[in-house]
Amino acid sequence: MNERRTPATPARQPDHRDHGDHRDQHPAHPPHDPARPLPAPRAGVVFDAPFTDRHAWAVGRTSAYPPDGRNPDDNKLDQIGPAYAPTADGVFRARRASGGLWDADLVSTEYAPGGFELLPGDDLTATCLVHDVQGAWPALWTWGRDSDSGRSQPGHGEVDGFEYHPTNPRMLELTNHVRPAASYADHLVTPGRPFTLRVLFGATSVQWWVDGRQVFADGTGVGPHWRAWLVVGISVSAGAYGHLPPAPGTRELEWQCTALSVARRPAPQA
Image 1 (cartoon, rainbow, N blue to C red):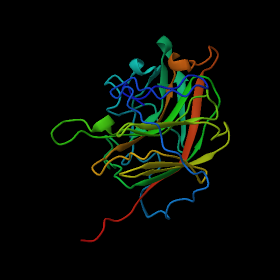
Image 2 (image 1 turned 180 degrees about the vertical axis):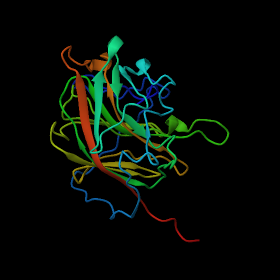
Image 3 (image 1 turned 90 degrees about the horizontal axis):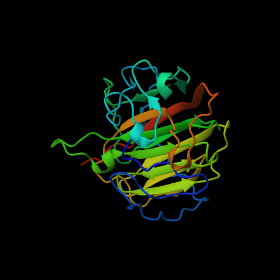
Image 4 (image 1 turned 60 degrees about the vertical axis):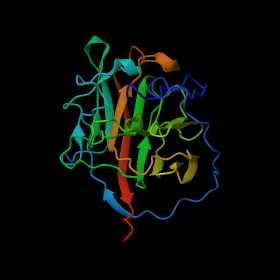
């Protein structure tokens, strides 16, 4: 979801290229078994703050974006800032602004006083509702802090829980930028109908589940030292990679995310 991410795929044509730091390094993803049951029951919940909780979520700030809150190099028309927050019931909106830009809602645990970070083995769930409106770009993703030496994590700690483009109205884009792997999974969602997303950030394999069915296991994982902030927001496509910008008469775009929580198993006793 930033200038280093894998761009959106052309309409109906899955594209596993990476136009950022990891060009052409995505391995083919291993097969998955749709009938495979869910993993073990979730452990204790360590994060479930509502988007209105300013101790847990910072509004309009992420180091994945340039300081001015705009990211045109990533095919985006949106601008983020402290005035653009989701509603109490998790509706993220982008509103047409001047100069061809859109004021877009975004929250992140980065810069929030709580500073929550995901760790290997964490288990995220959320209920999501997307709409088939041209130009919308909903996403739930992660972004990792630099190491103590100032070096970036591999892939900047980014794992895309999902990205959605109405160009492919039933597809979710699922990408691990840490140890590159991706799936452009079609026929997963229906616009206007809620779906349950579950992402297990395993050290050796990240697993994605939609409505209780495993849809992708990347076989690469995030490694044992990964740590990353949560980011939830809506962007607006500028027209590249086959994803059209909003129609001239569109004034607002939206999607909804509710019941987001993260569970974590306790560390083994020494």
